Image (cartoon, rainbow, N blue to C red; front, side):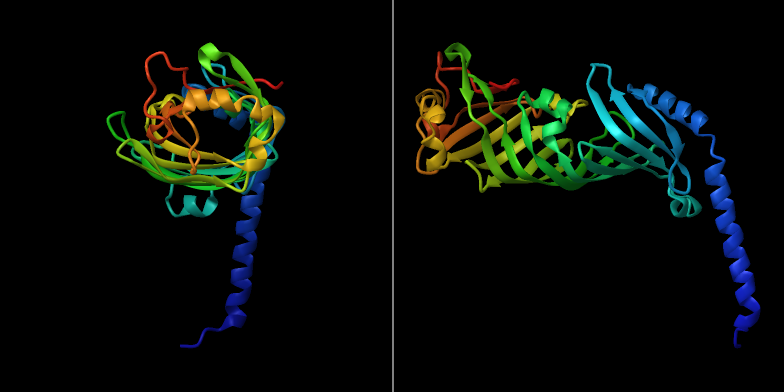
Length: 320
């Protein structure tokens, strides 16, 4: 049976027009202030304090906020130029309860989708061109001024209750990774001023299973110092900053970097703390937590740290 398109075409066009008009009217009549207050209330229930400037509609069905500040119970603050919270209309019509968040911060973009309802939840994110040098919360957590531009993605499944274990995977790249000029604390040996240290391009891939995260790859090449981790893993806790971290790493500095006067003056102290560097560089033992790693000598760098040996190296915030 042939379809009479001359008869159906006007009906389809009118249907599309009315659907578009309905969605447009819904978007324009969204009570943005009421939606903003509801969003702030829901964030407070999750332990976040939210302040925002102007509010307006976003997407087909959503809310856009300007000059957003998120602050947790411990005072950690994240600033965003813009935050869009939308409900994908296609997914909503298909019965999928999903919320999309798009944040513009640190000269980059972070897009996240999540399922905020009960039961196991899936969270996926994608980061594009995020300048780590502007990320003050990350600087506070790491204890050092970081450099580099972050791009990557991840997907995680969160359990429905506290007894469950999260799972997922992560794939990140940092172009021009490095540490700005600052200080390294060597325990009883005091703090040493070191120059800017570039790591080149850093690549990290990790998997999360049964509450344990394992870095399948963590390496940095092309900079003043090259890094390669081996068996680096962490145990998931409610605050990832304090998740226990353990594993080994090899760090090798370029000859040009070692010949800098400011590096030559501190190298003997680094050798004393970490053991002499072999052909492959310093072999290190990584401990501490994900947000506060500690570095000590590894087996290839003179064996495990002995009683009375200098304390592990930890970055200290601040510029010379």
